[in-house]
Length: 254
Length: 309
Image (cartoon, rainbow over all chains, first blue to last red; front, side):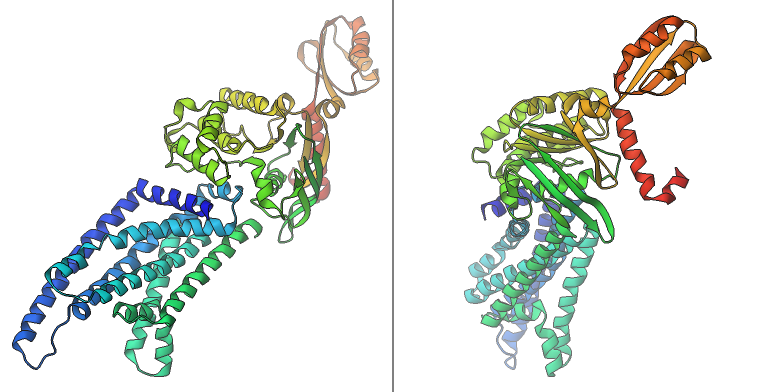
């Protein structure tokens, strides 16, 4: 475990020592700020409307502001996470520094976990950088803190899953660009699966939607904590990390 | 210290190394010699644990490389053909990272020691990307040394360097080998092996074709160069008649180049005396041995190659 943390620390420092880390951070803050302003404006207009319209249900900060905002943030992270993991193994293989890890007294599990934790730490920093938005809401209004907390949980779980997919893609190729594109396409695929659930209402479409990360994250974001969603994310990450482990091991034997 | 038995590495049907057997004793410096693609790197990577063997086994310090990889890696330092560097790190940070993942207890002390051994103190704060190739190679060596391993495996440590840098690295390796350390290094620069190693293992086409002490291997063939005042067919015939001389090549100005088995210098001098011997020198020909051992072996296995050659 100590070895994994050593690798994770190096990965994190590397991300901050290259422009990509800072660009990702700046872009993320700018765009989330933009989303937040849009959502607040929309909410203000709608709540004004609902105040004068007795036919409408009252607006709720949690359901009508927090949840859609975090939905947008998760989509943004879908775009950014592939850029965070594309380097992990691809760059190491290309510049041959993977040889250092492979010939050091480390297990493949320690290497994979280290790379994963390193990416996760940076993504965690990104997610925590959104903390001032809900704090602002708590200051001006009375949103349900439970919804905010579960929204964060769903963000962290989503990010963990995005990074696990990206890590596998990065271990499959020496090209960072290929790793980036493959991860992005795969994640968008999962997003499309969730959209299928909205088309129909049969058992087939439900099953397809259930396979998607986003359907599980959605329930969490609404403040509904279900064991099956947590199990889904845990096994999703587990499967992808295991596949990455096998892939790295095959670099030794293949 | 190192025992390799029937080591094979297959890629599909193709053998990169096949039935490689050798042993290296503690404190020995062994050169791994062979043309490009002979299987040197493959064998070294198997020893270092970044590649698995298809068959056979390799033991380092009594530990099986495949079964106890951690124990082996703790006592082995490996410098790959391309030093495994992170260009965005400084020399000190990089070595500290290497020391940590190699399980060194006293990281700062180990880094200072490695910096001192490889003469990198002056560039300790520089980024690896900004170092010259010679210095990058030193950092690669420092990385292999940082956990004070008993065994050093160096894959072409002087390739791509200029002559001065090459000499530096050679001196450094000699220094490192002076103690109790066991060193295996691969190269295709022959004089290097003669200068550093006590023993050589010649590998060609994935198989070991010879292994012996350098003097023994080179001693089998010797080149004798001499100049006589009165060259001619008579002189040539006299030289040819000397026991052990295999080939006589006449050059301009009465210079003859002989290729001989053993050491026939005294006889050659006697035979050349009537023709006015001006100069005679002999040298051991590892190169001859190398070319003979690696050159003859390959075409015999693959007849299609003969045509191309």
